[in-house]
Image (tube, rainbow, N blue to C red):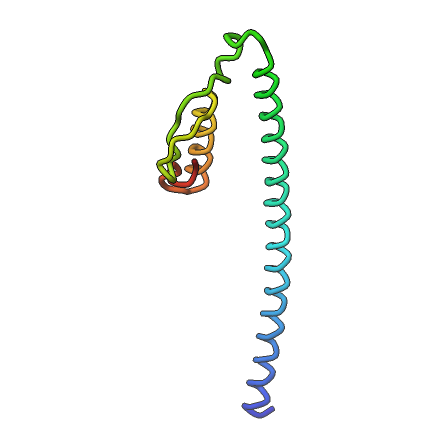
Length: 113
């Protein structure tokens, strides 16, 4: 076997290794995309659930029974704009920030409303 034939064989082996690695990475990306899609579905379900709970509380004549539903002004951390949210909003921020820090995000307040 000549040096050129040897190099060609080595290049073919490397190409095959890279193709295998590429296939593995594509499968990993597909799985991660599936997980992200399921997380989005979960978030949509939770959002619908909380909106229904807020609407139910709004219909209740005894507003004092639902202190977390009282609306108040909050500042959007990203835009600085004032927004109206329920008194439960700090719970969202606290949970968001805790999860973001656990995932390695610094200054999570800059990533959420």
